[in-house]
Image 1: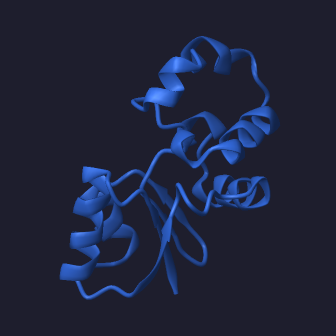
Image 2 (image 1 turned 90 degrees about the vertical axis):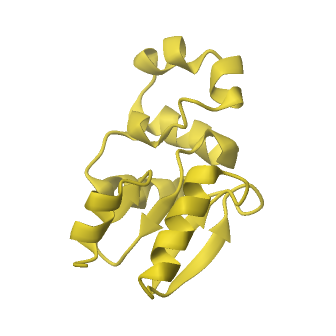
Length: 118
């Protein structure tokens, strides 16, 4: 079963959810604000995604900007970034679609369709 990790108030997440629903794709929904991913989950997902840790940050979020992470991330290790992401779900780019052998970060319809073979 796919895991759909989102922030319900996020318009991109709403778009992705509607897309999944319209395609009849089943998933478990998880609110990233109330059920923040753990460092272990993030480490696993980062490995499955093939993306660097910094790609998991919600760079347009208020928290990201208020913490000046644009200037801090380049000096951080991947492990430090994962710990920071695990500290607050609002730092994590969303939505996340977690499958058996893949993780998609952010909603790009073509990428999701290709990965889900639609």
